Length: 361
Image 1 (cartoon, rainbow, N blue to C red):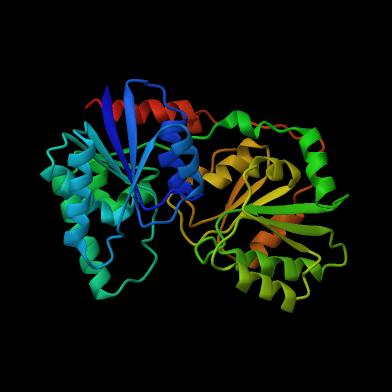
Image 2 (image 1 turned 180 degrees about the vertical axis):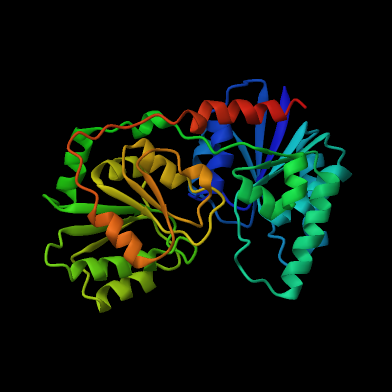
């Protein structure tokens, strides 16, 4: 029985967290035992499900500024719950500390997994220095370098290093969940009190990166059109919710924009939508936009989203220019013969197989 430590900053609902959780949920090799290491004390939604299934979840202090203490804690977990065959670390540059601790504990397989691309963010000197040191530790002590996209790999590992040593494993989706159903569509639209309106939709954490304020501005412009027949549904929660709701009220869009909050059935709300909008300022991948395409939705993504996400004939990658998005939105008609599609490269089974193969290096 191989023992694998999955390291993640949290197990709340989110893209990176879902990837880590899926290794246990969709596990194919039953000779693998997973243990999860999480920063901080908060209990995430995925954690409850893992514990119910008998999977151990261990909490330690967040790295913050006491990096020596953090390394010691990771090392203690590796010794107490080990010996481990592999450590699979997901939290970006902090993975450097995890790789160092895993090397001290003589774990033979040490994987760093890049999930995001924040290269467009301007950092101060201290943060830049920290990232460079962590990148050095990752280069030196990791044995495998994995990313969800070429952008994410270049950001965490460095472009030349990743091209030479890295591997892309696209995030997988349980595509059966997103098979389009007219029956579910009608049920959800009835719940939302929708009739013939064109429902624009978005799923994601409400924060600056996901750029929902861009969508609110789009709705304000669409409302001025004499033939306006658009509503916007935001599925998700986050730190910007209050700010976004305030903007909605100031623009008198209360009846046009719906804040659903967090949902454990996002696939059903995708079926109710007519167009999916994903205006992120940056992304490691952007799985929500992939799921929208699988559900058969015309999907508009920003040019900051990795090219790998543009996976169907109904996906349009646009600069974050309001006029371009408005023009594209009004050019899309409601599809009464909508069907879902299958995207082989995002198959969840493929992702799990590729990852489990890493544990046998």
